[in-house]
Each structure stands twice: as structure tokens, then as C-alpha cells.
Amino acid sequence: MAGIKDLGVGIGWRSEIDLTVERLPGVDFVEVVAENLHIGHLPESVTLLLERGVPVLPHAVSLSLGGADEVDLHRVEHLGAVAEAVGAPMVSDHVCFVRAGGLDSGHLMPVPRTKDALDVLVANVKLAQRNLPVPLALENVAALLEWPDGELSEGQFLAELVERTDCWLLVDVANLYANARNIGTDPERFLDEIPLERLAYVHVAGGEQHGDIYHDTHAHAVLPEVLDVLDELCSRVAPPGVLLERDDNYPSDTEIASELAAIRAVVDKHRG
Amino acid sequence: MTKQTDTQGAWLSAEEAGFLTAGPGRAAEAVLARLIDQGLLRVSRDGLVSAVHQDGEGATTSVEARMLSFARNPVQFDAIVLATRNCTEVAQLYRQLLSRELMRVPHRRHDGRWFSLAVAGVAVVLGFVSPVFLVAAAIALGFFVWQNGSGPITQAGREALSQVQASDRVHVVALYGFDGRFRGKDVGELFDFPRRVVRTVPRRPARARRRSIWNGGGCGSSSSCGSSGCAGSSSSCGGGSGCGGGGGGD
Image (tube, rainbow over all chains, first blue to last red; front, side):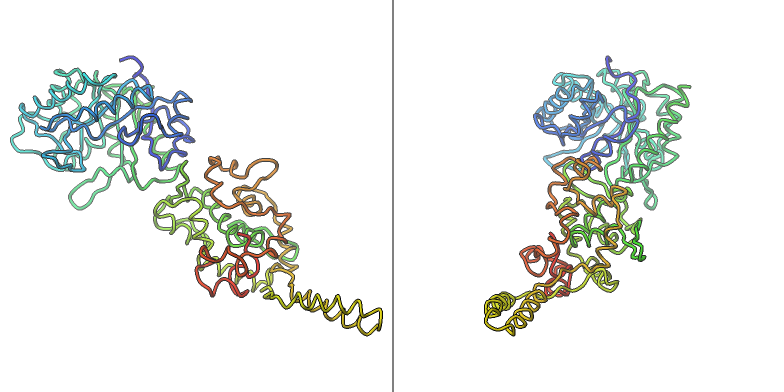
């Protein structure tokens, strides 16, 4: 995919930390939540980053591609329009559903890993791809439950999705770590099973343990264990990009810079 | 908070210098500047100020702690200045400046002073008839000057303030305000804020006009201490007993 190689290390752009993102050293690319942007009225900060040549990648959270409901093409068109507005080489969303029966869950819900569910997902992804001007990458989500009667592992499920749709993968190592903690996913097996040659980029985020559950909060520091999963991934493939997601409880600029530096150190360790 | 001193040893923090320069609002601006400078507050392009830590970590004064508490949830740049200006901790800061005799409670002015001025004028004219009226004129003139007051800053306060240097961007804010100018540049540029963010804060008089702002009304004598208030209570504003007495400057 032209233009997607060597994105470097990036951070999720959020309006609350716009000046921080602009001033942080070593931000090679940013990701914006597509639903938060309005075409024709891009945030000044995003425009500034674009003028500096910083790639801006739209990331969607509402396509609900894993849902049984018909894909809302208005949302797909908006995502595509954002991609064109920022000149993005690709867009992304999640392997999940967020609404069903007219209700919106407000969460990225895991899909059942069955052949039937995969058929639905594949059909929705293909429909979205036909209506997008740029390639689509899909991200593994953090799940607090597994649907019963699953027929495929998460890695197998994603591998088949890629094979049937030619989509790209956005691997969230924090979600992978959360799934390992909460539902017993084996990160190494996951990485063995997915087609790493279709890796678009990687997400890293922080979380917190509450009782028996690890929550992928995006509001806490990145755990060393999450960086270990990144390290494992980087030992297998050089990711085109790695992006830090932080959505709340923003730490100081210094702490954010430290997290980016820690991510870069893991990536560079395998490039050296 | 870094303090600067005068030869008499009257240490002034940036928030104290800000208060002496332009009243409680400027003190709040100085506090905001220091907390931003220390990375304890974050400002976004749309002017939202938010605390980096939710527990008030890093505050070195009660005013700083109060401002950090205001910023636990994002708040507009001008709103946090206003809220802090009105807080009881800033009123306490004023009382501390009074107790250190860097400020004084200004005389409450009333319209009677113009009558004494008129009496002095008449007495001067009558002084051509009898010199005794000149004595009466002097007394009436003295009464007028006393009634008019000499502002809330004491000589010691002025001397202490004169020693404060714009040695860093926090003290620049204390002396000139976020929306002021320093060495030909907008003060806001020192923080790389968009101009529209700092413009939300009402422009304060520069240091050279220090006297006039205290004498020119403000808390206790003008609309600046009405709905927007000082410390949000009558006890801390007006009547010369609260946040700046006859001054305020904002």
C-alpha cells in the first residue's frame, strides 16, 4: 500500500491535548477519531499538523461492521470524506459491532467467532470497502466476554477476514494483552495466526486492573507487559507504525513523551 | 513559588507581585502562568484549561491548590482566572499583603470630599480679605486629600514591587498580564498560545500604570466587583475590607 510504510511512532490526536501533540518531539503521525471531525471545518491543530507533513489517519468507531444490521453508508461516506480531507492513505475501524436492534451499546462489542458471523462481517467489510476511497484496516478489540460456540480462534478469525476481504490489520497490543488477562487469549498464538504482512500499524494503550478484570481504559499508563507484547510483535515483523492511544486523564507532556520514547525504544530495538 | 525580594526583605511571589500590580485578577493570572509553566495545567487550542493531576499535586500555595481544583474538569481560560480571582484564598492573599503592610485599606471615598474642595476654593478667595481664611483653606484642602485617599499600595509595597523583575514568563504575566505586551511582543506568545485564548482575559493596565488602576476604581467602588465579584461575598469585596479595597484593576 503506497504511503503506509514507515509511519513511525505516533499518538492519537485529541482536542484536549492538541497543543501537546503539536509540541511533542518525535510525533511521526497522528490518528483522529473520524466521528469527531467535520468536513470543511477541520480543527486548526489538525490542519497545522498536515501543513507540517504529519500523516493524519482517520480511525472510526461506529461502522459496526460486525453487526447484523445493514451498514450505515452515511457513516462510511463520512469516514471516506475525512480520509480525503486529510489526505490519508488508509482508514480503520474495529472488528466489532456497536449497535443492534436500533440500540447503540456505546462499546466496541466482540463478534461471535463463528463462520456465520464471519460471513456477515465479510459482507459488511466488502460493502464498506466499495464505498471508501482508500484501503480499510480493521482492529482487534478488547473483550470482556467470549460468545459461546466459537469455531475459530481470534487469530484464525482475523486471518480469514483478511483473506476474504483483502483488508489490512490494525493490531492493538493493549487489547491483545487485555484479552490474554481476561479471556485467556494466547498473544503468541494470535501473532502466529494473523498475516503480519498485512499489518498496517499497531495501537498501544494503558489500562488498569479492577478486581479480576483488566480494563483497557486508555486513561492510565502503558504497562510494561503491554510493551512486552509489542516487543513480541516487533520480533516477528517491523510494524509500519506504532501509535499511542490516550483518551482521558491525560498525563503531563513529559509523561506522554516518555511513553512515546518507550514505544520507540521497543521498535528500534528490533530495527537495529 | 519563586519569590523575589527588595532590599528591605519583602519577598514577593509572582502571585503577590501580580496582586500588587493589578489586583486579584492579575494574581490569578500569575498563578495560572506558574501552573502552566510547571506542566501542572494543560491548555488546549480552544482555551480549555485542565489539571494534569486530579489530586492537586504540585501546588505550592493555597491559591494554586484552589486553581488546580477548579481545573479537575476542563474550564475555559478566562473562567478559571475569574473563579480564582473570586476565591477565598485570593482574599486571604490580600489580607496577608495587608498584614505585611505592603498594602493598606484605602479610605472609603464619598461625595463630601468635593464639598471640602469647594470650601477650600472659597476660603482661598476670602484669603484676600483676611489671611485667616487661608488657614481654613489649607485645612479644607487637607481634608480633601485625606478623603481622596492615597491608594491601597503602601510605600513598602511599591518598593517591593519595584524590585520584581520580569525574569521569567511567570513574572512577566504577573507584571503585564497574559494579554499584555512585553518587549514589543504579546505576553501570550511566551506560552505559544493562540492569541484568541489569552484575549479572553480582560486586558490589565501595564506596570507603569500601577498607581492609576488602584485609584481608578475596581473592587468596592465599581462594576468590576458586582456580578463577577471578588471572592464572591460582600465581606471580601468593597468597603475596603476585601480583595483590593479601592483597587482591583479588573
